[in-house]
Length: 215
Image (tube, rainbow, N blue to C red):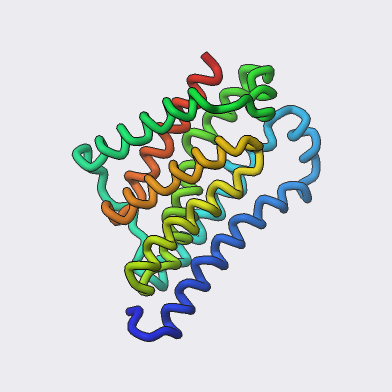
C-alpha cells in the first residue's frame, strides 16, 4: 500500500491535514453566539471538547479509515496494560513532586460543582478519545512507510506536538511531563496496534488528575 514515495507523501499529508482541521476547528468556538457567556461561566472548555473536538475527530477517523485501513480501535489486553500503567503511575508521582501550580487548575478549583463535573467529563472521556484519534492515531500514522528512523521521529514529533497544543500549561515541567506521557502512549499504540489501550490509559491518567485536583 505504501510502496512508492508519492503514495507515502500523500498519506502523510492526509494525516497532517487532518490534524490541522481538528486543531483549527476549536477556533470556530468563538463564532458561536453566547460563547463569551460560556467562557465566563467556566464551561467553554467542556463545550469545545464535547461539541467540537470530539465529533470532528470521529469524522476525521471515519474519513481516513474509508481510504486507509490503518487505524483500528483494537482490543483491550490487561497483560499489555500493566506495564504502561505502572510507567504512567511512576511518571505522575514524579510530576506531582516537581510540578508547579498552574493558573488554569487553580481557577478550576473555585468553580461550581456543575462546572467541575462538566470539566471532569470532558477531560476524562471526551479529550482522551479525540486526542488519541488525532495524535497517537493520525499524527503518528504520518510516519508509516518511511522506515525505522521515521518511527522514532514519529514518536518524537507526535509528542512535541501533543505537548505544544496544551497551551493552558505554562510550566516547563508540565511540558516535559506531557511529552513523556505522549511518548509512552505512542509506544503502546505501536505495540498494540489499536487505539483502545492508549484511550484507556489516557482516560485513567486524566481521572487521577481530576481526583487529585478536586478531592
